[in-house]
Image 1 (cartoon, rainbow, N blue to C red):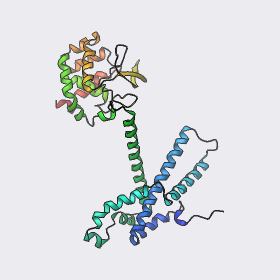
Image 2 (image 1 turned 60 degrees about the vertical axis):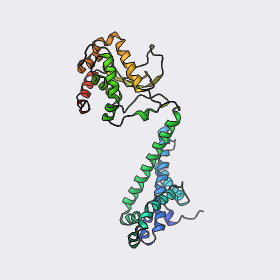
Image 3 (image 1 turned 180 degrees about the horizontal axis):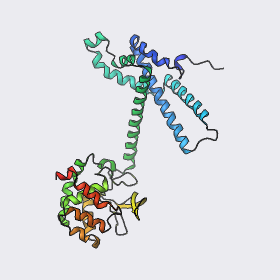
Image 4 (image 1 turned 45 degrees about the horizontal axis):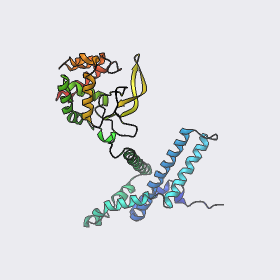
Length: 326
């Protein structure tokens, strides 16, 4: 029979974290290692839980039950504790190195040496068990999120060709940034069409959510499509096939559709002017001249979009603070 694990290695023995408060005062270096290992233990446990959740989403086992799930959680917790104590995945060592680097400058001062400046461990010594666990849980959660984001960015950059631009790289961070960058393009397009440039820019803001939700190709590359122009049989260029919301008989439905893809925002504006000027359906919109509201209403009447509130939404954007400044 296997021997009973030492007290400090048993996952249900919460006194081990409580003991850190005393150890942090007597043996700061030893306590730092224990705290880092507890962080790593919680981190590993979260990974195991995520894997269990994924498995349940795919399809549970025939023998799954509340009881077996409870024992699985106990086993995962014990396994996490044991793995962290036996070397883990290197997270505890990384935490220690990071802490020691941050503390080096503080501890080197005479004043810090007199008071034994170990801020992190002193904070641990002042906290109760629940707060220590909450701190470890938050730190490990933020770590996982940062890793997931880095992996997502890496995969995206690898999937996009060297000659392509990532859709995420052309996202605008704010409405003001959107307006500042695209206003000159809107002015040039409006001059060709003889309409109000605000109307054109407001339509682009509506179609892209102020540039925060650009249409991307399947490989993650940017399409630079600012006006939601679809790629019908007249379009011979590149395409971006995505899910889109359409209104059929007043009912919103999700559909897959192909949209035109360009090499730049400038090309998007150029194609937009050609698209409107070459169609009889949008003759009234062009004749609206400086009347931005009439331009939007005529676009909707001409069938530019299936959204019954398309013109109303453009008017709302036109009355926003960012357009009032133009």
